[in-house]
Image (cartoon, rainbow over all chains, first blue to last red; front, top):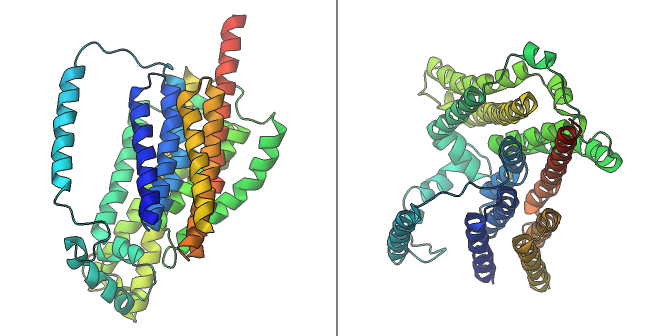
Length: 326
Length: 91
């Protein structure tokens, strides 16, 4: 039954993807991308990948739509018609699709316990997580401890992406934007969004903190929590206007979050080395190695959350600042 | 029982998707996306019970909280565009 659901949702996914490519109205494309993201999350969920589904929910449904719309406000509504080059692109994509379909014949059946991926390191992770860390969510254990280097790399990628976007959009220093005339923005004059939104903001931030600190036990962790908290602040910005949100959480705080999050993660690794362990080997952090692992995971997840939240909000404000300049 | 409910929700999702694909006005599409989001929340909740893992309701909750922000962003986008248009017209 579940496979039927998954197949059905995947079919809808393909239809949506084709429609996104076909449409020339960029606003329609943004709306369809939002649906695409919802379908994707439902699919992840049905395939029992709750952590990924939560990430897709946190990033795809809220933040991405907002950032796409901010970008759309800077450009036009319609895609520019591009002459020629279509047949070459179609040929390349066609050949690649054929190759991928051919490769999929060798793929093991969905959910096959004999598949190579379930025979390699996965059993070891499942077996050793209770012994080394004693936390129920193996995904968090793998992401933040067993494969801590990868996650550190991802945090630096987020950091680099944030710096890149800020460079491209060329944010002016705070005093110059403050001097510029601020256009009236926000949904302040609409009663229903105002009242409901104000009620929602604290709950969204609280839920984000829950996802942050509950990551060892349920689906969630730093990435999802950072995105959810950023969504809460973005909601405040939508309601009260962007300037008001910058007053609540200034740009300097956001940059400190991005830099501080990445540094916190790296610093935990260095402290591990100073205490006589390997880089990012949390066992040496406390007298009891299991407690040391849990402590390390908690701290680096906090670093990830700070970096993601700061980066998403910086990008959002960079777009908004650019918008008010034009 | 849960399966019947899931199938009903899936059918509604298809209807919303059809509206989002066909349009014709942007408001049809905005509404379709909103309906689609709500249906996803419901589908996730029902499937969480179908799997016998109600702790996965966290996800549905996250969706319910976040989906509204996207829709508000769309509304503000149109409001700003309308204001800009007005300013251009009055100049």
